Image (cartoon, rainbow over all chains, first blue to last red; front, side, top):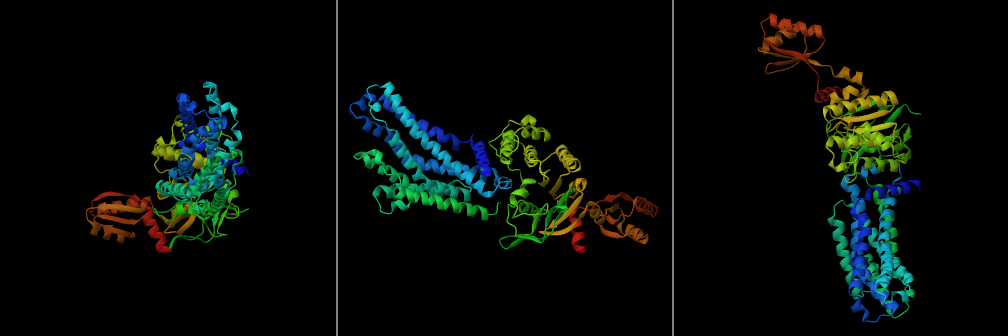
Length: 265
Length: 302
């Protein structure tokens, strides 16, 4: 446990000056900031629709969710999984890392866990910033109806589902980046996977849930499907989420076996 | 407890079908500076990586302070500090941050980082990005990283690579101090015999994955007796005179003759003999065998 903890702290220490870490903070800031800015400057236009509180929150949050869940999130996951491993490939530090008196599993698990925490941080910030910026807009434009509905539950359900839905992608990209030191292979595969995921999910292919890359899109579709029902009832653990979790679990174990059997060059 | 810091028993290693380490039985006594000599590609780095468990080794072939490596990986690594090939440092972190990161991994006080920077003379460059360091500075940082955990056993793979003469002397003195004052054991690899001779107490010579010689530095000196190199105008006459007076001719080629060195007095005698007999001596002096010749010697004996 101590091994895992210090490896994790070291991961943070190493990457705190890299883009992978800062992107987890900057991405949600920029995207939520832009949307909030848009809602502030074109408030007159939006107010015309006379959305009730819940609908307004729905419109407002799906602006961020749509852009981010479909495209930015998968690409951020790819980039981050690459970056966490590339820090060792690039500096040729696998050999030093594995000659420290720490068990191999801790070193590996800490890396994976770190990637997971970055993803969680990024998604949490999206939810948190959507929530706070909504209330900020209410304060700046009192005519808005944000105050009529508390979106805390629905936002945490949406983003929680999105987080679980991206775990499958994270695990695949993590292994690809662990095995290959170059940028193009994991990115290429991830890119094709994401496009395939979006297409299969959108055309409603019945086996789309088996492709982890389609899980975020499926999660988003499920979320927008609740427009008429009670959004609080959005089921989190659907088939596609279980598949995503299964991929994550299996690939996490597989990654360790690949690493432990591999000679460190 | 074993009296060896490192012991390998009939160690083999293959990359695919190519055997890189063959039946290697290293014995590195505690407290020694063990010079691990061999030309490039001899298997030195591979051996060091096996000792660090970076490359898989069969069970019961590698022992660190008497402990089997595969079963006691963490305990063994705790006692080892290493510098393998070019130093592995995070280019985007400063020298000091690289050391602090290692402190985190080893669970030791972060103040140790400044101490190590001072030891290897990098205090002024502490806050410069390590990627911007010169090769020599990187090497120093690598050595600092190897030393920071105060390990009992140091594995240094060509540590003076890229260092200037001053740096080489500093590293040499540092190694001597670590063994004599702090009782550490150092395995240092090199392809330069001259470098090893100045510090090592024990030597192992490896070529094509096989250990050709292992013993103390004195035992090695027995093997690498110097020769006398004489440059003359008349080679045939000189050879006649020398062999007539009991010198063993090792080689003769375009006016240069090599004979066995037996002592200073004899060398003087050969010189005056040649001159008295009308041979012009351009130069005469001892010449140590270089590693290549030593290899040939050792392999031909084996």
